[in-house]
Length: 301
Ligand code: SF4
Image 1 (cartoon, rainbow, N blue to C red):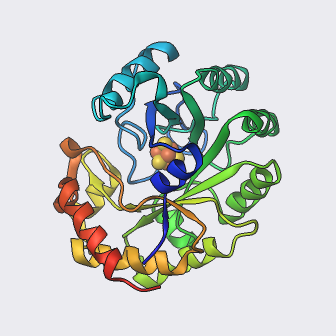
Image 2: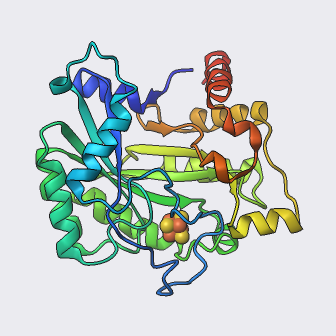
Image 3: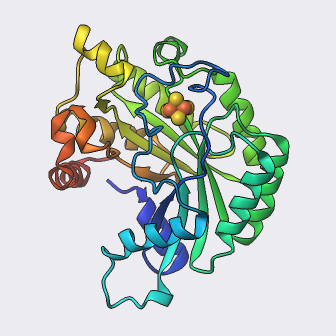
């Protein structure tokens, strides 16, 4: 089965492989600091759903550190000056806080010539008009993606996971972002407690019908991580966790329901291994990706 992966999209656009630099904006999250709730989404770990970013460094130091990590994986045949990167602010809610400071930060990161784009993970209820306008201007120079953690369209699941906003809020943000010409990437978690496969496909079908067409989607396996409310829930009332084959089959079904032009940024997700309670098979990335590739190869649209 054919689909557009993020690496295909980037390779087509930039003529080379583009790597993500995981950075931190220093933001917190209204769903954790008491503005919406103190508990956060039940699956969210201490690191705010992004445990790999450099912490306690200024932007230049972070870029340097993140490049060192990423460059280790890049063939030495690609000269340093030809390497391209996307700046990725993943942890917490990266448009929440002092708007002036954040707008300066996003402008500054895009001033690095090797950084060809910016990806900002945030919540749909944390997008001020001024921020959207600023990002829209930056987007004229280098591409800017806004990543929204929708996870599900079902309000009962949203309440269970303490997402803290209604679907209507997502719809409003989607309209404002796309009206401003920004590309939106939606995160969906596969395997949330109480959701059947058909509930998950409902979410995918909803995304497939968005107008204008959704730019990107991240399919993420539900990870149960130590120290989260989800872990307590799982331990007191265990619920179904996908086996690897079952998960791969579900991903293929999701791909079948997505428009072929939607860029698939992720097929599984990688939670921090040291915190992982279940499913343990997800810790073996190589096996997961090989099994997934095989399943997708065999699947038909
Ligand atoms: S919105 Fe993101 S950072 Fe905030 S609690 Fe939920 S997953 Fe964590």
